[in-house]
Image (cartoon, rainbow, N blue to C red; front, side):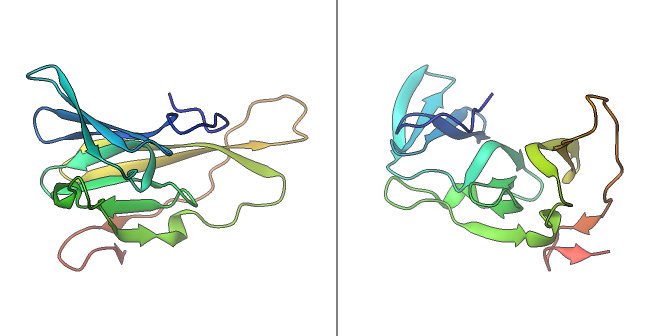
Length: 156
């Protein structure tokens, strides 16, 4: 689990699976490292950090990685296949409307991206509402559906 409050150049900021045998671990200031699960060898993927925070989910049918941006925590896509030791992957699409301003007293805690298969994902977010006398309660906030295809990000 990633801990946002930790600091330092080698604190893990993002991770993902690339291809069939690579696990990438990205740090805030130390670059991105690759572990080959076939050979068991670590290598440096690049001196850049992934443009995401937390786990990045790869959708092979779309050839894109999905995750939350390192700044702002918006849902975004990225073509991880274009990365090289000297060139970091670049965000392709960012959905700002999935990170709207929160109501007063709501404190964002964590965001989750749950792969449902066939290029579908469910975004879940947890917020804490202060002053609720310690009682746990669920509040339905928003529900939206997006389509990712040739035209990318069409609101339905």
